[in-house]
Figure 1 (tube, one colour):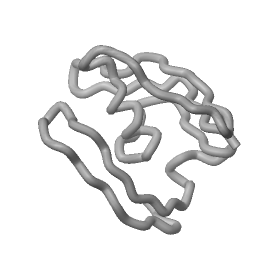
Figure 2 (cartoon, one colour):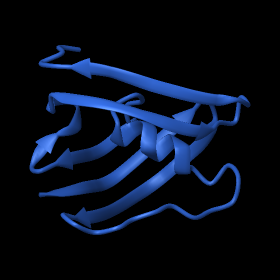
Figure 3 (tube, helix red, strand yellow):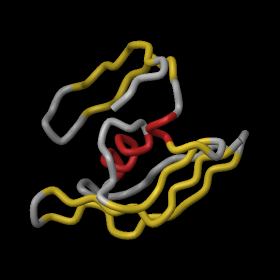
Length: 97
C-alpha cells in the first residue's frame, strides 16, 4: 500500500498554492511536512484527504483515486490560516460526489 501524489496543482484565484507536487509515501513509512507558513502543507493534506480537489494531477491510495476510497476516520487538524483549531470526525462509506 502507498500514497502516490502525481503532479498536483492547486490555485485559489490568482494565487498558486501548489505547483507540480509529486511524492510517494510507502506503507510503514513515517512522513511529515516541513515548510514555512504558506508553503502549502495544509492545502496538500486537504487534497490527500479529499477535502479539496487538485486543479490537476492525481492522488492515489493503494492504486485507487482518493475520491473513490471509502474511509472511516476521526482526527484532529492543527491550527489553520484562519486561526483556531479544527476537529474532524465522521464516517464516509461509498460517498458519491
